[in-house]
Image (cartoon, rainbow, N blue to C red; front, side, top):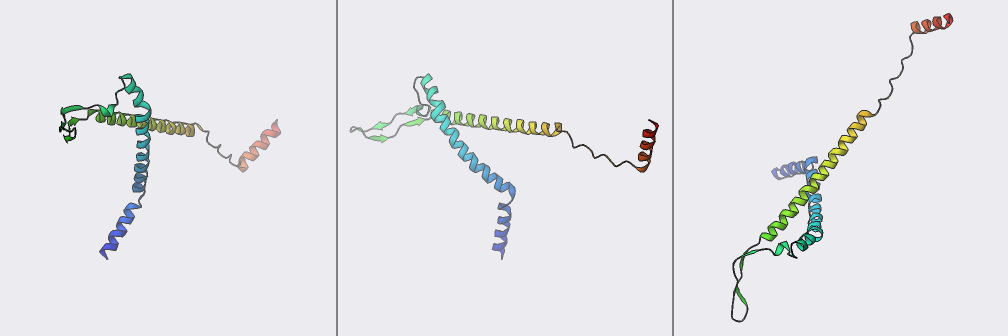
Length: 147
């Protein structure tokens, strides 16, 4: 019995609008991240690497201890490196993603503001003219006769 109550509670939680919206956002965010990573790696970084002498950021590293090789050329102990180039690459990715999200949020805010202005500027439907009362009809007839 307790198990079915747990499942019912979990189902109610999972089907709330906020949880579903968040799940959709995470999925779209993951796909958007792949697109931005491709833009950074395939479009932005090659020209920057060319400008700084053909260096690939991911290859930048500081060798703290050289690799130890045997007489036959096999590596006995791998080199100890600090791979700061990969950190730079991830930082560029983050900055471009953050800038893209900022631009999207600004565009959405501007569209929302424009829609609100259009709704406020739209003329309201004219108020229906009420049927004149009997007194008003009589006064209108008197006015017309006096003319």
